[in-house]
Image 1 (cartoon, helix red, strand yellow):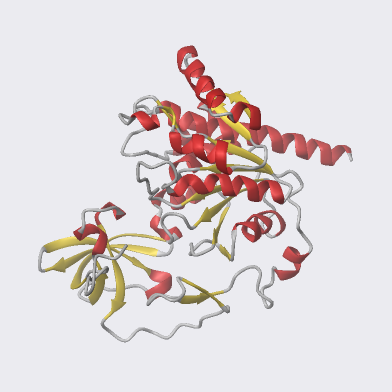
Image 2 (cartoon, helix red, strand yellow):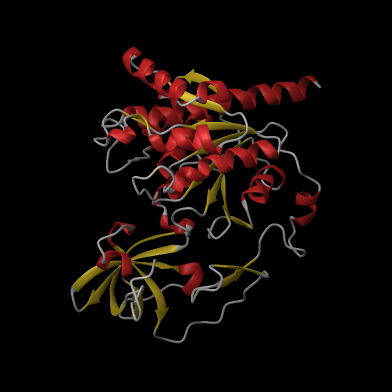
Length: 373
C-alpha cells in the first residue's frame, strides 16, 4: 500500500567516492562522502563500470535511511561522468520496467550458444537438487557435497525472492574461490551469475545440460523477508522450487530451517516458515534432510514434522551434517545466519550439511548406475 498522494517511495542522494574498500567479481565496495558524513555503498560494475575515487555518484539510500536491510550499504544508481560505451548482448531485459533495466543474454535465447542443449533436455534424470530456504545454507550443503564426492560439479541456481544481484553476496564469491561451487546461474529477475536464465525451470535444465552439474543447489540470495505471518515470507518459494525439481524429473532434497537458539518461538526447532513451505506449498515428494543431533532435539523436530503432516508427504531422512562444517573450516569459509556463527547455532548449519551429504550419496549412486548400464 502506498503512503498517500505525493509520497516518495525512493530516496536518493548525491555523493563523492572517497575510497574503494574492496572488490569482487561484479561489485565494488565504496566509501562515499555525503552530507551526513562518510558512508558505505556498493557499485555493480557490470551495470555501470568501475567508479574512481573522486567521482560523483547518485545513490539509492532508501533502505539505510529507513533503517531496513542491505547491511548498511547504499547503491550506486548513476555516475556523473560520461560512461564508456559497452557492447551489450542479448535480448532479454532484467530489472525490466525500472530505471535500472538492462539487457543480457539468457541461455534460452535463439542466438544463445546453449539453445540447442536446452531444447534437447527436458529431464533432470534424477539429478539431486538441494533446495534451501535461506542463502547461508548453500555453504554447508556445497561443502558437504565436495567433501564426500570431490569430483562432483556443484551449480548454484540463485532465485529472485531476495537480493537480486549475485555480486551482492560475498559468500557466493568465496564459495567459488574455494572451489566449493563450480558455477552460478541467476534466474528470473536475479542477475549477475555466470549464466542467466528466464526462470527456475530453464535454470535447472541449464545446470544439467549446459554446465554438466552433478548436484544443483537452489536458494535465494541474501535478505530473506519475514512478516511474522503464516504466508508472508520470501522463503515460502522453497515449496515452489521443490515442485519445479519434481516436474523436471529431479530429486529434490529440502533443507529445513532448524535452530534451538533463535529467541523467536516461531523459529524454534523447525521454523514455521519451513513447516508451511513443506506441508502446504510443496506438492511433490522430497527428501527432508534432518541433521543428526542430540536425541531430545531430534525427537522435538520429528514431532514438529509429524504434527505438520510432513512425515506423511515427504521422506524424512536423518543424516550427519558435520562433514560440511568441517570442510568449510578447512577452506577458511566463514558463514553466519542472523549474525550467529556455526558454533552459536550449529543445528541450522548441520541441516544444510546433512542435505549436502544426502545429495553426495545420491550422485554417487547415479554415477555407479551409469557405469553399470
